Amino acid sequence: MEVLRGSPRTERAVGQTIYAYHDGYHHAAPQYEVLFEGAHVDEDLDMVPAARRLERTAELYLSKVPLTTDPGYVYQERLFLSIGRDGVYLTIEWTSEPYQRRIAWTHADPHRVRKSVETRLADQGGLTAHQRTVFRKEPARLLEKLVVIDDHLPMFKPIDAAERDDGTWLIELDPLADILPLHDHLEEF
Amino acid sequence: MPDSEYLTGLQPFVEKALEILRCTPSVDRVVGRFAFADFDGNSHTSPECSVLYEGTHADEDLDTVPAARRLERTAASYLSMVPFNIDPACGYQETLSLSIDRTGAALKIHCVDAPYERTISWSHPGFAQLRKFIKVVVRKGVELTAHQKMEMLTNPARHFEKLLIPYAHRKLLKPIAAKAMDDNTYIVELSPSTKLLSKNTYHI
Image 1 (cartoon, each protein chain N blue to C red):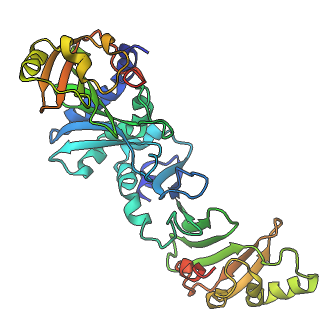
Image 2: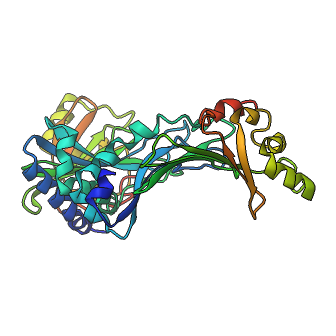
Image 3: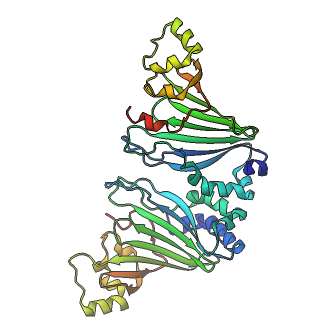
């Protein structure tokens, strides 16, 4: 926020993990970096002390978020923390699957978070029109069909679900659900 | 590529570093480097570029120095002009460091798997007092007598060919002085006209 205040043309600061190396079998450990989106030129931020401070300390903060980065593991995740003038969203993606979890909040009401999971169904296209209608009304029942998080999603307390054009589902979860240690539950998968 | 070409290309990096040293008296030295962060047992990955500051300052002191962030953001584009070998598929890989203090600068290229290093040093401003060095190790199986060791120091050109681990192009290096580091390792100063850093000069 200090960077955004010091540089009006910067619209968003994004901290992210990136995997710089892929040898065909696994990614190496991620690197943490900060990007600034907007109409500014990068040199504008040389005059904003908070920009360099953020770049130098980003790893310290971002590495606190529990995500799986171990190259020896079956899956690895990627993190984005995107901060605009209105609010923030923290997204964790699976590098090789259409699977994403997100926590979003506004600066005006930081304690009122929204949590969601984006994923796909185990049985692609296997839902009838009736089932789709039911699942939109009762998203908890949909979760049994999810491939990625099948056995464990009931604890995430879904409150809404919407199917997207690409066949993925966006499921909004109860704000009280503990969404980030999801990788612990994925271990069995 | 002649040495002078990439040395000229490094000049903006040097100027930015000097600006940092002027703005932050507690910083003694600015070091840009390409190093290998990951080694999987068979090959190194691509090197990562970083800028380090040596001195008694706190890192936060540099937040208010615009040149510091500018140097960090652009270091890779300058340092990558220097021809050194980073290919993990090659038999050897090198790391690079460019160290700048208030009196001068030194560009070092070090082979990660061998005690082998090339250095170009100079004084500010510009490239005054440009000197070139190579650290070499006596080849396996070659035993220098005490007399030869003495001669090596007084007339390095004569014994240079016995020392180099890499075999090719040694005659291009024009040694002018040598200093013994230990029985097997020598720092050999080369003529400033030597083309020191061209990729693959020292490896067949």
